Every structure is written in C-alpha cells, then in structure tokens.
Length: 250
Ligand code: PGA
Image (cartoon, rainbow, N blue to C red; front, side):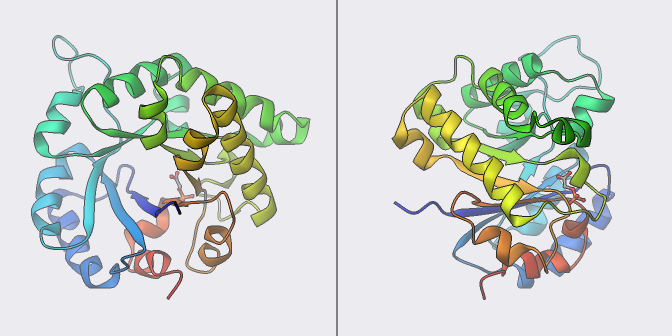
C-alpha cells in the first residue's frame, strides 16, 4: 500500500495564541490536498486555540515536545496525558534544537517515544547529522545509532505507525537544503535500518520526512523521492507559502 505523505509545520517558538488563530485562518483555504496529511506542530499554549481555529478543515494540530513522566513535580513541563486530553495526535520528539539547547539525548528521546505510544500519540522522531559529521563521512552510522536507540522496546506495530524526520542540522534554518540525492540516500538508509530492527513490512509502512529549509521550490523534487514521505517545515510553515508546499503535486 502506498504511504500517504505527511507534511508538518514546526512553528518552533513563534506565534502568540492570537497570531496562531490568524495564521490558521489564512492557511485553511490554501492547504486543501487529499493526498497529504497536513499537520501544524505549535507551541503548547497555542494548541487549544489552534484546534478551535482549524475545526472543519483538514489541518491537524500537533505538539512540539512533551515530557516522559505521567505527572508530578516537573515545573514547566507538559505531560502526554495533557496532550492526549486536548486531542493531540502527533508530537515532535527530539528535534535537534531540543537536543542542543535543552540537553535531550537519544535516551530521553526513547523514553518520550515510548510514552507517546502509550498515550496513542504518534511521535515524529527527529534525527540528523552535523556538518562536521557529514564531512567526516559518518552520517549514516550516526543516524543509524540515533534510530536504533529511539526505537528501543518499541514494538513493530507501534513502529509502523511512527513518523521519522530526517533533518540534517546544517540545513535547518540556513536556507541550505540538502540535495535531493543526499536526502533520499539517508531516508533510504533509515528505512533499511527499520527493516533490520523489525521487518520489511514495518519498513514499508513507516513514514519518513525530510526537513531543513524545505520551500515551495524544493518540495516537489524532494517529495517525489521513493523514500521521502513528506516534510517537516520550519520557517516556511509560518507563511502562506506553506500552502504551496502542501499542494506540491497540484
Ligand atoms: P527550517 O526548519 O524549515 O526552518 O529549516 C525545519 C525544522 O527545524 O524542523
């Protein structure tokens, strides 16, 4: 069965609640594409007003992060149950900015992935190499390690529903998009790694996004690759341009 594309915005730390409502109202008529699952991952405080604004449209609202404990004395954190109760179905886990600025590791990513599945929230699991690692020729080894740890104790059934976002760190927010060949090569390596951990059926079902300076111009070629099932879009998801990315095949 063909995998349905999933194109997700990652708003990062942008958009106040009222700005979020305004942007969603702008985007609603621009993102109609039945071939694609359309998702906006937004700051926690924007989730509820964004969901209200997106009602009746094909836009789903997801989260950018969550904690791996159920509840308790973790000031400032958002629990999986809070997201699930708000109706959230997707959460970004282990974005490179969280790894860099908030000390997330492959181990905490794995804990969060397991928790998300427990609450029937689909994790969008981020991986990606630095420019130094690419130049050293260790990209695939590094990504395979990130994937293997992220999926520890995750069942094949859960894994088949997961989303992986391959985001080379040097391409995030830099305007420097990976070449189509580079993106396809790593996305294929990720799929092969999933086949090794689980089996061919799981590898064929899992959706793998590319992220890093995706634009309306680069999206059609990237999303036409055999192992690229959509994108995780930062900067361009804050503008009407996101509509062009979602409608890349129209
Ligand atoms: P960018 O961000 O599209 O602005 O490069 C992508 C991301 O970090 O998810």
